Image 1 (tube, rainbow over the protein chains, first blue to last red):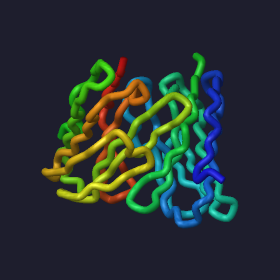
Image 2 (image 1 turned 60 degrees about the horizontal axis):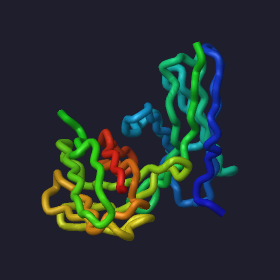
Image 3 (image 1 turned 45 degrees about the horizontal axis):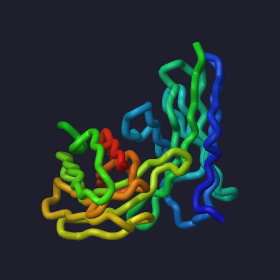
Image 4 (image 1 turned 90 degrees about the vertical axis):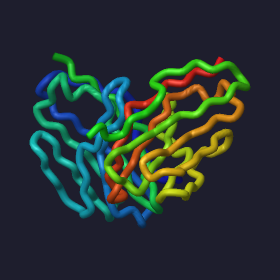
Length: 109
Length: 111
């Protein structure tokens, strides 16, 4: 079983739609749950992080963690063309981060 | 603050050549990392350092060496480049551990 699973399939949505992304993980020792955003030809940047089960909101973004199911999600409301990027889930453990493969999101005006 | 910077931004090497990628950070972070990113493979950790003078192997260390002689710098070396090392290389630093700051990347092509 892979430590982190993230379906890398590209996702195209019309402007204003809700974007839903998710990852599963297998390592129970993970304590921090993160989402990074990576624009084309740029380095990843931290978008959101949390360390507890439940929801965390930041503007149009909501991060959801379900530790019992080992499942995390990212929701983007009222998506904008500027949200077009690759989104990577990440989990901490042993002085390093374990990353998902990333989801490419395209928001069509 | 410049954050994390990487030198060079682009490089083309021939098989067997060597080179060093330089990463510098001005945030006084203890931890530094080198990743490679390939299509369909995501970010994979090559080597990392938890402090000046220390290094450790990551997920894909073969063919690479690193050094952390100064806290602000982390060097990645390729002694004998191979086409399989064609990739985009990212350096990152962190403190606390969970929030890593990434550099802009180095695009390396080995022919």
